[in-house]
Image (cartoon, rainbow, N blue to C red; front, side, top):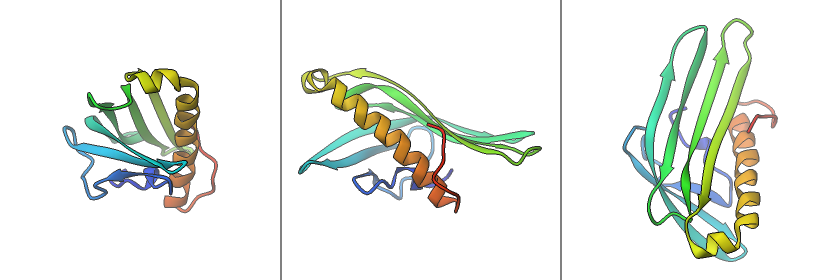
Length: 135
């Protein structure tokens, strides 16, 4: 997981897309919905790169102060060498940080779940698999 394909959703993307996935790097998610655009900045807080019977790679980012929510998301790919099974897992926790995100929290949660589903589908497309994924 060294590129941003899991976040090429059509209506949302990472900017700048050439940013390397490394601890400390800052990126923004740019999203467009219902004629509105918004930008939310995040910093990569750690990177996972583990070899072994189960190989793991991924990263977590945390929101920066002007983000609509306060929280963290981890994106992780696991490959079980023995079974050949590959899993994509997203773990996220957040709470509203702005008045607008508090007022629209239900809608915000729906969008977060949509990002999870569509990210799993984008990851499957990126590796040439189907559209099934865990999120």
